[in-house]
Structure formats: C-alpha cells, structure tokens
View 1 (cartoon, rainbow, N blue to C red):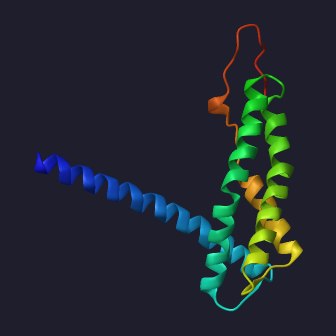
View 2 (cartoon, rainbow, N blue to C red; view 1 turned 180 degrees about the horizontal axis):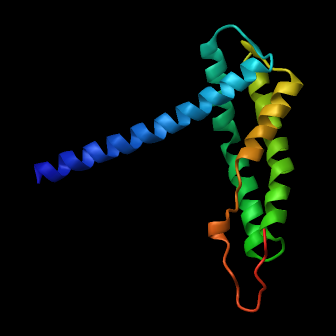
Length: 146
C-alpha cells in the first residue's frame, strides 16, 4: 500500500514539474519577445510577472476564443480553415486587451502598442484551435481539402 502511495505522489510531482516547465518556457519566450520589442521594465523579474499576470487575466478570454472557433466548426457553420482564420484576429485583439490591462496594473513595466500587438499576433499565429486530427467527417459531408 505504501509503495503505491509513494508512486502516485511521485507521478503527480513529475506531472506538475512537466507542466511548470512548459509554462516557464512559454513565459520566457514571451518575456524575451517583449524585451526585444522595446518594453521598458525595472527588472526582468517584473517583466516575468507581467507575462504571468497577463496569462492569468487572459485565461477566460483564451477559453472563449478557442471555444467559439471550436463551436462554429462543430456546428458546421464554418470550415476548419474559416474557424482558424476567425481565431487569429479575435485572439490578437483579446491578447492586446489583456496585455494593456496588465500594463495598467503594473507600473514597473511599460509596454508600447507595437510590442503588445506583435506579441498577441505571434501568439495567435502559433496556436491553432482546430487541428486536422479533431476534424471528423460527417455522413453526407464532402471531405475538405486543406
């Protein structure tokens, strides 16, 4: 019984470390991109905090944009390509609003509009809410070629 318990604890800790490592990599990439685009900050720690705060604030908007694109696709109101193309400007706008809100909440970081828009656009371009693997062929529906 003790062996199973410690194995489960070790498995959970390993999973938590993997998730935190992936999140840290994304945060460092975003912070580095913001630094390259001329964002002013008092210390790199404040810039990391800015990106983390933006991620926390933006989670509901991210869920909304992913859900909207997925719902339009599943309901058949948009093709996979159309849903993904709708997602890009919507996610860019939401990311820009979130970064601006974080900029207002953190006076130690001063982000310019160009940095905010470029980071939001690159983030939207790197993610694709509807992948080919999730696409299902419905009876009577022609296969879409992408």
